[in-house]
Image (tube, rainbow, N blue to C red; front, side):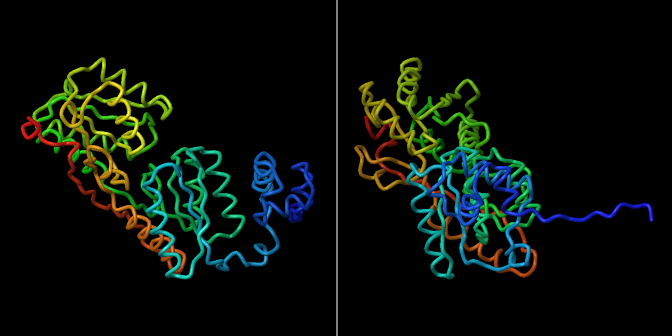
Length: 347
């Protein structure tokens, strides 16, 4: 027999420790989710070596991988946005009802942090994850789907990924907001959005903005779109745009944090709402009806989004067969208040 005998050598925790340049205790702590004693750099190094060596703890090697922990993880991209408080409430309530615990992480829009958290969830044998993705870890998302790891993508869409998806009809939301301003006599409407080529939500809201203008016979000459590069610069960018475009009489803000910056900028420019400029914001926050004047918004069913996402994930975890992948699209609602009041009524 001319073939060579190949003996598979099992990778040990000592191998991981040696290649990562740390102790076996450090590796063990990280794999067990005890991260308090280690720096982010050490954690990242160890997890990278674990992946490179394809190390699997004994429990996994013995087939315990199929055991359920009754824990799910959620990775969000922005805790500063009030929208996510209600989403989390919906997820948590559903977890409690179905006997699951929830682990929460915030990537803060950082793809490296997002990748680290997802891998940590897997190391802890979390049963599945809900993710509001940065949309900048395509190979990781594809690997999760290929490995049939239970996952629900929430609020955003990941191109070419066949996974459960729970979103809002953002095109319709953008259309409703701008159509309302147009019907109330506004003719030169500015749309304010974040500049981010990967994020579907803001792109879709701008698409709705354009569709509303087109439906009223307005061409691209009436498109006024301001892309904010960072929240810190938003106030300055908005003020400059409004000074340079004095004809603006309506504003559609695609994000509630941008809406706050817009309101501040208008105050500094001594612009009155709704007399000078009508406003429609996105997300019906707690403060929207309490500011002066009360803010017209596009309301998203945030609690229901969270609840449905958790239900989808838990059903996938419990299913003994390959579950049918679902795309769930919630409908937005226009909440009319004084900030978008009709021009004739103001006069």
